[in-house]
Length: 239
Image 1: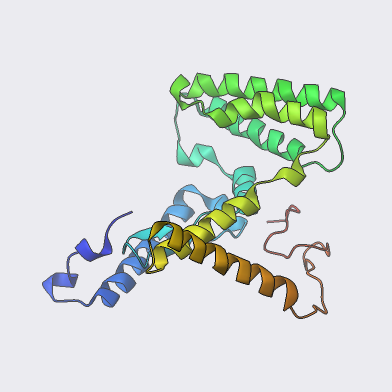
Image 2: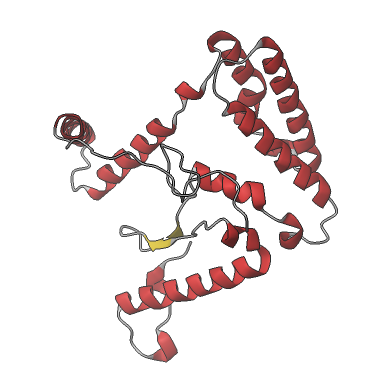
């Protein structure tokens, strides 16, 4: 990230801020496409967009985050040998992220886990963390990895499946509320908190009670499945 306001004018001639923003984004997008074609051809095959935008508050150019489905598409087709050619631990790194993708696929499974499946999952998680420490430093091990190895299997034994406990909606609400707070003019402690809560309550009420009845369901034109579209489809495509 960098501050768009600190960029020099084009060829020493005065340039409005809007012109700078347009020029820099075009340059970034051009470089991004060239880089993708050079080191990440799989990214173009799965049709995942890498978007850039200018933050209205800070004036910084930032890149958008990938969704879970987009992460899965990139991870399943990424070619590390084109990104880090000649790396001494290339084969281990490839194996590391292949195993991680396998663990995530197991956790996404529907239905309750059996005791045998939980034991297999926990062993895979332990082996993955051990392999991680052979590539990265011990200080790079995070509390999330501890949760993955010990608390996820524990929760599976108690509840059978933990997909219903996904925190994706909570994370999204946190992002939304944070944007509301910093974009508002009221930053006065309890008053600002009350304003944000009231706005969220009004939004929830309107979404629940004032929605029009939908006369159609989302379906995928690629696999004819329900509940997703062609862009978020996980079915392998012939490329």
